[in-house]
Amino acid sequence: MSITAPKDTPVWVDEHRCKACNICVSYCPAGVLAMRDELSAVLGQMIEVVHPESCIGCSECELHCPDFAIMVAKRDEFKFAKLTPESKDRAKAVKDNKYRKLNV
Ligand code: SF4
Ligand code: SF4
Image (cartoon, rainbow, N blue to C red; front, side):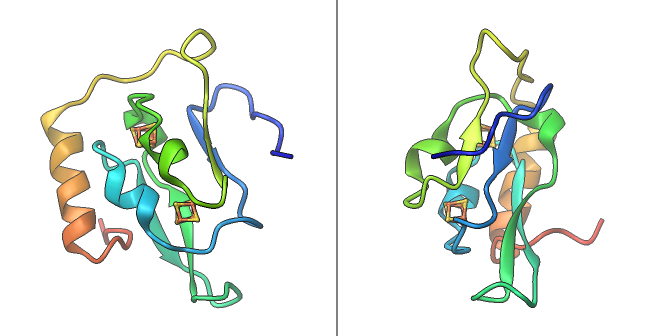
């Protein structure tokens, strides 16, 4: 069972399933995803969709999440962004920041 697709959203998370493994963040080429501190979560972190406007709809996050916790809109239901140099740079910066949200 997955949660209902929110309207006008490229990518969304079922936080009850996420175990904060970072895999989706490591695969995202556009710096859309990052981990936030979440004291109530098992590992003290939780996935967050920090830049939905940059999502290119590649579905790498959904394909690689071992817990079916992240979902991507269908191409015929959402107009995704193009991959930009800024998005790529942000993706690298997040990975260099141990997958955590950037303080910007
Ligand atoms: S669909 Fe692609 S660009 Fe969008 S959040 Fe997932 S991995 Fe990142
Ligand atoms: S891959 Fe899945 S379980 Fe791992 S951090 Fe991302 S959403 Fe959470």
